[in-house]
Length: 112
Length: 115
Image (cartoon, rainbow over all chains, first blue to last red):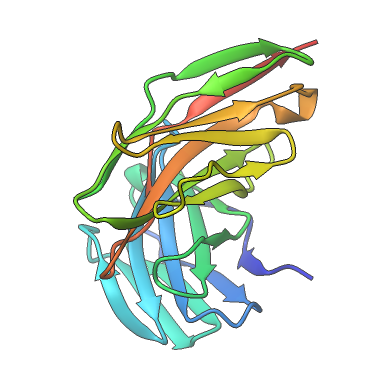
């Protein structure tokens, strides 16, 4: 049973396209996150949702839009993809806002 | 704002030996948590160990232990009896209460294990 699952694992797309990454957690956690890991392996928070409500929105281009239909799901939609969006995107969840995070397996996005 | 610093981009260790990865952090909060995550080539982020700031005792998980020096804001990870499967990126991270602060990561240390 996968605790935090993301789909797809790999995504290759052309510049200018719109794509979505889906995330689901079956842990019953209230808080979910999106992190971006760049080519130098640096992990940076993008968004955080608590019970479907956006609580953290870091400096991210507005081409990135998270959507949480229920507290078990947090999807990431990206419009007008650019080369610089190429990275690994991680979804994570936690039972509380300040406890350990459980990560999905990551989605490697490559924009060509 | 929280910051986490890992000053060793790369480390190597002989199999069965012990290695220590360094981490320093900065936070203005008194209530916080510290973590070490492992990221093997599979890309999965795996929690190795966690430490609550209010606990004086250093956390231990099998071959992994930490040296938590609160006054110095230092949180190093010691891996004993290193195994080939320990080869990975290791990230130090911190989380502060109260508020909506996210988990903040250091830049990572790439650990190689030499057979």
